[in-house]
Length: 114
Length: 109
Image: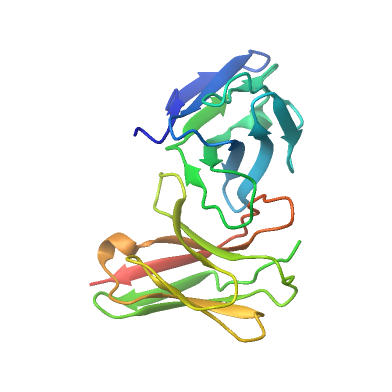
């Protein structure tokens, strides 16, 4: 299994541009989520999904959209990038929403918005 | 959501046990304690989790106090590769992982 994969690894955008961060997992996990990590802030949950067709907001959802058309993929869209969205983005997945399931993280995407 | 409190940093000598404390005094009865770590520039890595009983796996041991208000992660023989930020997390009812600031563990030769 490849686990959780993310593309691209690095990205530079200009303010106002849009882009999609890709996330895929091959473990047949129901639950997927997106986090951003900023210095001194820890990881903050952006959006999550408990299964195909179902998404919900996390702590910091503004400026981001998600969709979950398949179990495997959970893309994160930035509609109009802002410098405040400069961050490292991590995608994660786990078997289901139950409390006892461990979460697997991808390697991250480093995004810079100028 | 139960919150956790960890020391911001700790040092440990290579080959010695690293004991990382965590306070979670407002934990609810059905909330699990999770530990993750993040090595520089990589995604977080699951280490261990527990509810009430002490747990051990190939990476670490987790000791949870009887009142569940605190726990300790033990790396029995720390190596330089264990240098990382360690996060103690209490999972809330919705199943979301809420990361705090963590403890930056430096293992020194």
